[in-house]
Length: 373
Image: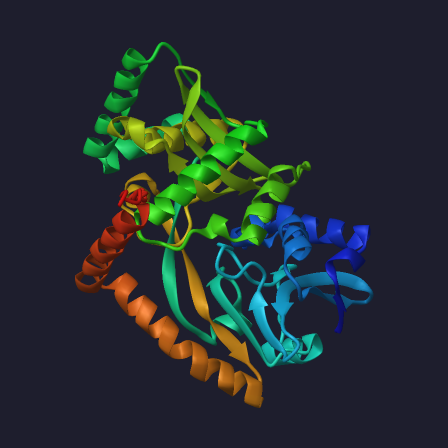
């Protein structure tokens, strides 16, 4: 087994094609999670335009590429999954039956540690070092939208009935309601990013789009299109203007949900939920097998899902002082975050507090004019 490490711009067209071929056949070979867009070469190459230290390890057997590991590294040898913090799928893209020694791979990459927070299934040598797994809800449409809708009516009758009733109300209230599955107008993407930034601030969360590299990455992926990968902007319009939108990434069989948001003025119609149903319908017609809603507990995800995948977080380490220091620094942070997120008695008060902070942050500033003396 030979391992070569490349910078994004050094990866050959042949290697990119081999990487894509492994993804396109993954569902036939028992590893459908490897088809996730966040594991595509296009995502790694796009991140490489905005973040330093992006590398791709290519594992070869008899001069043929059999596995690809994208990662980011620091000069000290600390490695992270590409796009850690915004990527919803991470791991080694490999051929069926391929096995590897995790620490040998790290040594060849010059890494003391490799950290992940959305490790997909079927990653045995990495999974042994995962600290815990988390559910990642999925919406299956491989049997067609009508089949999915029938399952949804059976599993979540009240949710389905209410959402479809709100859609009918929106149609009655607006002169025109239409859905565009693949909107190509960059102005609408800017609208979505503005909504999402406001939502982050309103709920007391960190505004991801305040980071120039994330905004640049999303714009880059919006313009990235091939037969096997594309950035998809889906939009629900009412009265000629967008009222809900979502930007995600697509491979041949998977639509990864990423950034959904809506116009708060239309909140009474639940336009985000209507949008997700229309996305499911269009994705089914487009040959998509499932929509990956991403890790994280949200009520709407629980209502829409048909099943759950499992993603894991943790790190693989070698016996190295850098790895030990990294664990000492990161373990308390992760433990505290996970304790809050996974326990309702802690999460709900924390969520309320963040929303209060968000209200303070979004109160418009008042200019006080000096008084005359």
